[in-house]
Image (cartoon, rainbow, N blue to C red; front, side, top):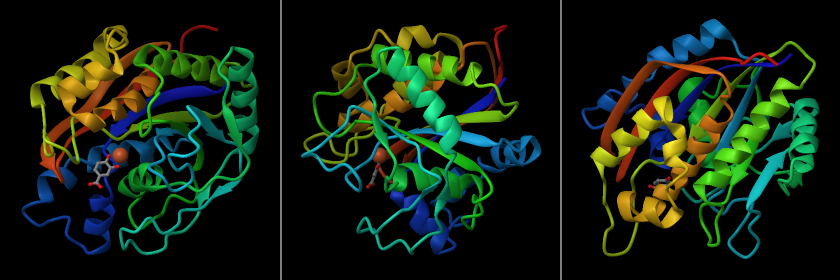
Length: 283
Ligand code: DHB
Ligand code: FE
């Protein structure tokens, strides 16, 4: 049986990639952000997961606003990044895991999630920045990654109860996979942030910290929010919290918090880094 051994929430802002490319990690602005990451890196290097299932949102690299799958999953053996206009250097490809990807796609479509299934898919900063944060220097090639993309750019968007249910279906699909492999699930993006408009720069620390608490102990409470609630509480782009909510849905067994850091603002966002350990339920 495949085993989800843990989960991570992390920011994915492009400014992180620029800071890393330019060696700015220990400057006063970035130090409080980057200093939180070594315990999570150490845990990943100790546990050596075979596969990362990574929930992110495509900000326009593969799916522009004219064609937006509500949910998409990659089933390729390799994924490439491309120029997003941030001036970030070209980076190595990301390794895929087509066998488990197809198993998940088949299982969750059978459960009623009408996924867009992508045999080719460019992956943007929402996926590549978190991988580079965990394996700096783009040393992530040994880890197989399954991209799961949730629309957070263009209305209509799936509501939190639905993204949580998607995560639960993916958790069941992993549980029914016959190979003995270890999986870690990433939820990227968030937390409170608004990049434009009247409330540009808006951050709600209390809301973010409450969300982190609920992600550990009371995830069902997060499914009571609508996307408009998330926007009111956390700013226009706080709908990216849906990736954290989907991640938590995959954790069907016992969850223990191993590490947490909240830092804001960092490039106009609230950054929540969390490492959760997970024990699979009896199947
Ligand atoms: C920025 C981009 C993001 O995708 C995000 O979630 C937050 C900030 C940015 O361009 O600064
Ligand atoms: Fe984003």
